[in-house]
Image (cartoon, rainbow, N blue to C red; front, side):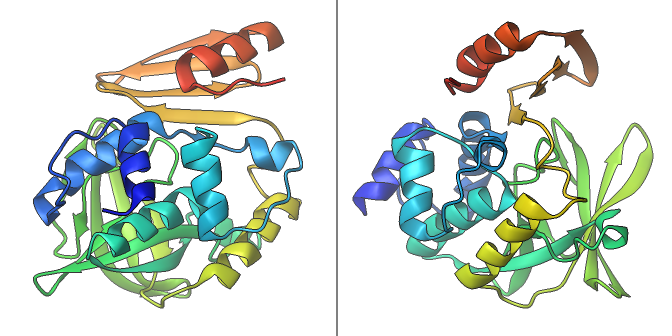
Length: 253
């Protein structure tokens, strides 16, 4: 096994079969989401580093950081590809972003297994299915809600990812299956970093999955959701740094 994969497995505390099969992907995705947070610290602190495989390994494995969609899903894509899965990186348009000139700025993964297509996503904040989502229209359930892929042609793609929570269904994003590469990732990085309508270049945000839900940290609040129950508390800058260290494993200067 490639040493970087062994290091990543150690980082995410994955103790399943190292000869990862399709049936193991749910556990692999859960462990990744529990230990690698969604966070925009690099954007806010002006760390303008090009996105490529080695840089992602340094940041996420060596520095024990997290990232946003164009970092988390690409390193997971590289992992799946080296493990022998039939995968492609794809782009998506988050619902609402089509009105903000941010079309195609979400990154996800498409996977084919036994001639069936699936979406893999470990980089959508706390909105994670934590298992492959089939293109059959079947709902997939996790601690954050239920998800399905629906085929519908729109201006932003041929498919829609939907999320159901508390009986309400909403569109998460629109997508198609056109493969993208690292140059496209850097295009997305530049947009998300610099665009005035970007939701991630205004203030710090950290989010992570837990066994029973998820937690979200902003500069003025800390929210823990367990079994669908949300507990939100106001915090100051000192508490923010302490929670970043204690709950997300990231030390901020």
